Structure formats: C-alpha cells, structure tokens
Length: 172
Image 1 (cartoon, one colour):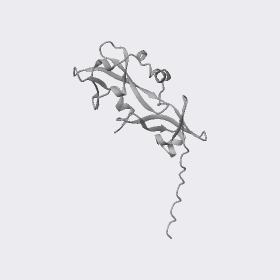
Image 2: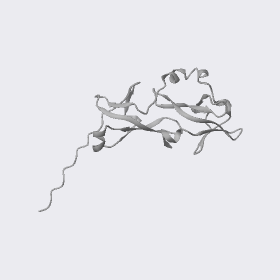
Image 3: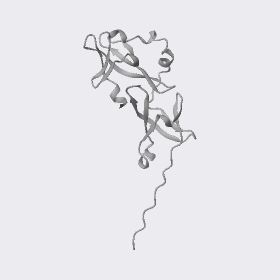
Image 4: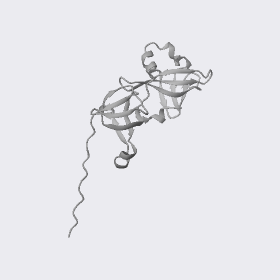
C-alpha cells in the first residue's frame, strides 16, 4: 500500500511485549542509491534521546503507528556500522530540485509516496515554478522515470510533450 510522507511520520512506536508506546517517529533515513527508507529516527519516550528504528525491525504497521518486539530494537545511530554511510549522507528527498537529462528544470520535490511493505519510494511529487504551475500543475513521477540521484538534484528522463488539440470548428 502506498502512503504519503506525512502518513509515515509522527507515529508512535509500540512495544509488542509491554503494549505501550516507546518512541515517536521523527524522520526517515533515506538510502539515495535505491530510494529506500532504511529506517527512522525516533525520539525515545523515556530518555528523550534520538534513536534509530530499522525498517526490518518493524513487525506491523498500524494506523496508530509501528509495532516492534521491544524497546531493544531501537539503536543509537553510532552503533549501526552497516548504515553509517547512509546516516552520514543525511539525504532528504523533499526540497530537491528535479531536472531532466537535458538539464531542463522541472521543479522541486514536495512529497513522496512509499510502498509500506518494502519501504521503497515509488513516486515523487514535484511542484513546478509559479509560471509552469498555471499550465501544468504539479507532476507525479514514478521511480522508473528517475535516471540519477545526486546530492543536489534528482535527474529524470525527458517528459512527454503534450500538444494542445485545436478547437473544433464551429458549424456554420
């Protein structure tokens, strides 16, 4: 099931063992190599420190939040050796400039939709400049259209040009 970014954040992390909320999700951890959410930063309910919940430790996703086995699955970011490179990148999708392979500016990423089973970003939503938004509005770009991801921008394949159809001739 696809969910927008707002539906993933500010959710509770609930312990299956104790049955209470143990943390609150604050931000995703993106891997820009494959546009996957590897985990989430969360604020511990008890110590108020920032910990990491890895995607694979989530047992179930509910409307109220995420269910995990116990508080032990929350880790300090410095303990996650395999994820250190991704954490150090601190990559954020929202606000990235989107351009085509021919360097035509498309706009900025305003939102994204994630497949909750795999945590891969499936679609990005791009807000165009004020002038373009009068004619085209915002764009939905599928992950298959993404050509390259750099620290500054997301490069997509060329957009299909739409040709306005001529007005039908009035009958005389």
